[in-house]
Structure formats: structure tokens, C-alpha cells
Image 1 (cartoon, rainbow, N blue to C red):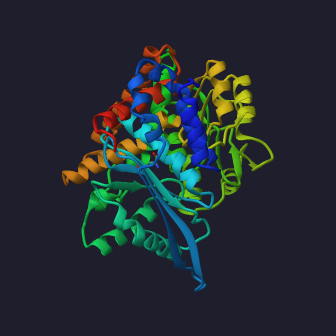
Image 2 (image 1 turned 90 degrees about the horizontal axis):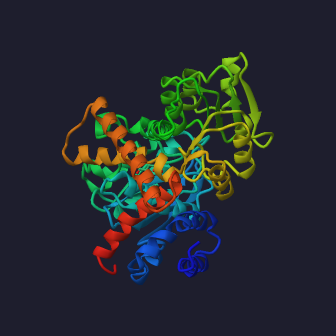
Image 3 (image 1 turned 60 degrees about the vertical axis):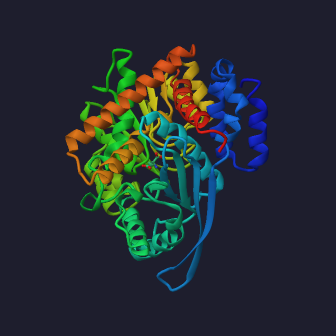
Length: 448
Ligand code: GLU
């Protein structure tokens, strides 16, 4: 790390004790910015680094709700409004028991640079709660969402802060959240949330966008080597919205996707994942991934979490689409040993710092999440555009826009990596390109 960045990093650690995922995300970005501050000392003079690491506003609130047994439950809700240099705060809400301030801040920090890379006018934010929706009835989820929004509504708005989904927050939750926002404010303010249903302000392609975008980014990387997905073996982790559409697009480009997972373990299906069965089990029934193996039969096998790693399965393209730090140094070594060509992160920060270094040293094409999974939030910005103009676009038009945006992000990352002397380093390219745009806007807007 550049010597001028070191004291800033130490101050961030001192000010945010125990927030290890946030520090990991800061380190990852700072690790790329040495050449930028060397060339642009005015950014240091204006304390841009110190300011970019300190959220503009952090909201923590109590979320009381009543479960089906009539017991009162309490969760903790968060919204971190990190940076509004480029536009209203924008980023998802995560409902998962692991959520605490450090997770929300890592996600919000990543979101600043990701949103900048999309080229759309959106700032960075993130939120959520330590609520576990799994095993909860629709009624419980609704009451939780209503209580959550009863506090959140006063902080958000189409020109202020525009939440969306993330882990544990999909179409059902966005519906309940939007309904409560509308009821409290008495405003049909479509642009206040994205990921809405198609009949009430949602955008075509938003559901598919993150997974499709990740595969498109990987396709662009392979193309630089004269290669493509056709005939490739691909490993995907996760079985949520990102994983499912990554599998779908990879398959339609001629790849054989052989894995999927959830928190209980992973499946290896050497004949190729049957997406209809996977969707039935995970989306319709909200069941466990082992049910896939029961229904699929053949050579499909389930491995319980902790017994072995999904990344031991030989593959040519790895798409981690589950959660942070799911792919560690040992996993990366195994993937390299088995000849992996490209890794594109569909999740946010799924590869550990050690894992990233192993891929880079082995010259594996590696796309960080802030570039590779930006298709989701980019399409959220397209949803905001449609809401602002009270219009709705066709699937083809919207998906063409998404493909162009992903190509744009790929090319921007590659160009910045080249310009700063690290050709082929998409981590450096994404961090530098994402940062410079935000930093310049912050400089122009003065000390705020
Ligand atoms: N949660 C997604 C992300 O990590 C999407 C956010 C959004 O659409 O605002 O980028």
C-alpha cells in the first residue's frame, strides 16, 4: 500500500473497531490507489480518502414485530448513506442473521465504486437487518417489512436514497416495503425503491440483471483471449436470484454448469444443473438444495456444508454468487490447480484477499464483484429512469442497455488498468476507475 495511504487506513481501523469486512473492503480499494494519489496529490490534500471512508449518514433503528405465536420480536435495522457525490444513495437491503454495522458498511463502501462504474447518476448506500426470513411465514415477513419501513420511510425518497433487494430481500419483501411506504406517505412514489413488480413500476430484466451481467462480464474477459463460454464447464455457487440467472445465461451460451449451493451445502451435477428443478426447489418451495438431488437423480450428489468445498470441483469458469468470503486461499489454489481460466464475482466480495492474490499471480482472469455484479444496480438505475418518465421499456431494449453497460464497465476497467501500468488487472482497473469519478465529483462539490 502507498505510504501516504497507510495513515488513512490506520485511522479507519481505529475509528471502526471490529468491523472486519469493512476494513477488508477498504484495504482492497486502497491497495489499488497508490498510482492515483502519486499522480493526483490534490486528492490527498483535500482529504478525499478520509472522507470517502466515513459514511455521510448512518441510521440504526429498532424493528419490533409480532410473530405468528403472538410473541414480540426485536431486530436491528440499518441504513448507511455512504456517498452522494454522484446521485442519491443507491443500494440494496440485506435481511440475514449475520447483518451488523460492519457488513452494511462493507457493502455500502463497495456500492460507491460499483455504482460509479455503471456510469449512471447514483451514489452509494446499503441497509438491512439481522432478521432471518428463512422459515418465517409470509405474514411474519410482511409484519417485519412494515415495521422496518415505518422507521425507514423518513430517510428515503427518489431524490434522497433508493433501496432495493439483496440477500433475503426479493420481490415479496420489496412489495411489502413499497406498500407500507405508500401507505405512510400517501404518495405513489415509484422511484423510491427498485426491484418492484412489473405491474407496479418494476423494470423488465431487473430480476435477471445481476446474474446476466456477471456472465456478460466473464464473456468479455474471455473474449480478450479469443475464447468464449461454448463447451466450457462452469461452477456457480449460491442458488438465489444471482446464481439462477448466471446459470441460465451461461447455459444458453453453451456452457455446462455443474454446481449450485445454499447455506446447507452444495450439489455437483456432472450432467449439468437442471434449472427448472433448481428453481422449483429454491424459488417456489423455498426448500433446501438437497431436495434438488432427490428430484434430479442420475449422477447429482449433495455435499453437506463443511465436508468439502464446492471449489474442489474441476471447472474452467468459476462464478461465486453466494456471499462474502465464500472462496478462500485454499479454494483458489485448488481452482488454479484444476486449470480455471476465469473467475467473475456475482456476489459482493466472495473471494478472500488471499484468494484474489492467488488468482492474480496465476494469471487467471479475475473480475471483482464491484465490476462483475454491477448489472443489478445498473438495471435498478434503468428502473428509476422508467419511473421518472412514467414509462416502461421492452425486454429487448432494456437487456440491450444492460449488455452495453456491462461492456462499458469491462472496457473502462481494462483501460484504467492499462493507463495505470497494470494491464489485465481488473481489480486495479475497477477500483481506480470507480474511485476517480467519485473523487472528482467530491472535489468539485467542496468540503461537505
Ligand atoms: N444489492 C444489489 C447490489 O449489491 C443491488 C442494489 C440495487 O439494485 O440498488 O448491487
